[in-house]
Length: 252
Length: 293
Image (cartoon, rainbow over all chains, first blue to last red; front, top):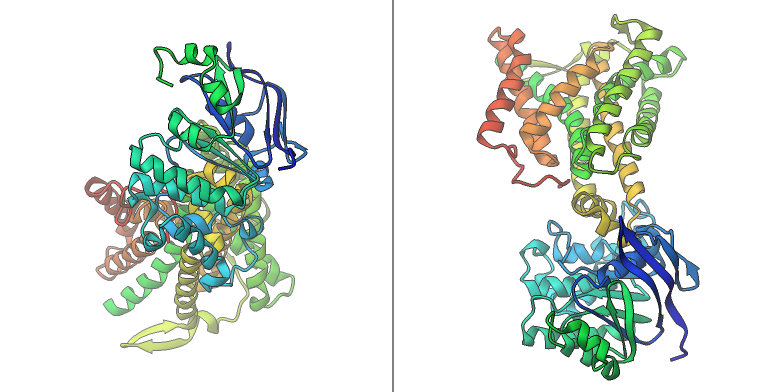
């Protein structure tokens, strides 16, 4: 790839009271790459994702996405710029059907919900595109079920499908393999590989190192809100500081 | 006769339901009560009065009322809801909208006094009509019923089967997720306030046309019953509001038939207490609080 930067962080910090959950992080997510973000619990990984998506606003530093300084942008603006995410604890619209979860994210309609209000035909509401996405994740036959009824693995897949429905440039996955067994994790690796060509870049927070090894082109390791190592996946995973950070916390 | 009172009850119940739908839409979306909602019903009558006094026909008054009350919804959202998004925002919005409702009411009273005023529309609208099963039904009641049914079905279709409706339900369930998906949450909320207020406006106009007069007291009465009917039907549930509205309207009609008309204002509250005791989530609530068609 060209090495173009999809998202860039420069000295980004976020303090909650006295605690600096993210403490001066600089990081580039280049086009064409899957960047793995690892680190023990409380290292600041999820806060970092929350900063990139506008859930929190940085106390310091600058966040650039697709050449826009989005440091103070709202969730909705950042979403429309092409950033999508999934959550550690899956957050679907549980009362909407599986299909509706994907249809509601179609960017052609989120900007102007009134346009085509009278277009009652499901096709004109983007039903076919949504069904294609569901088929990609093997969820097509569950389209009319309500999302709250899905099994865990399917719910995780639907969350990724919904994120893709916004046609994002950058997808942020927050511990997608959490709560999955080995077989489900392998399927997840396949799913993420499948969707990679649809995206400019992926950032992947994960504790499951098999997932990181399988997918990440580059890894950033964090501890206490700071980056302690970054570089090629193998190098970072065996970096002494990273091993030390994980000792007694998680096995790497 | 009983059939006549039941027919009346259905018509009044439809009006209750229209007002309750506005309450339940906003509640299902924001988890907040809009206490200014009832006074939009009052406002509608007086907007019609002004329009007719200025020479508009009753047919022209209808769209004028819809536009003005719809816009009043935008104002209510802006003044009493937009800024209060924190957890404490629920009580602040309740207080603020309560105050806003009283402002609307008192401004109307300042200008027009507290006594009912004659609305100069053709009297045939509410005096002549047809007879169904021996019960005389004036045109205005038939029209009210027809309009109520159309609006209810329309709302059901919009919320259940359109892009906007999907966004409304998504925002009602998880506003931050909706926002990140690019949904313009503020705009969706604005649309809902416009729709809810226009529904209150249409009911206010229809209420005024039942007897050819406008009164500043109607908003308060309908607000109270609308809230009760929302609770009885199940918070956020559109079908529940319609069902409960009709039930209460018909029960009131029956009470009037048996000479218990004075009791009808107590009835709705007794029903509400009983329903909440047996099913705290309301008839169709099902333990859910967000908007559903």
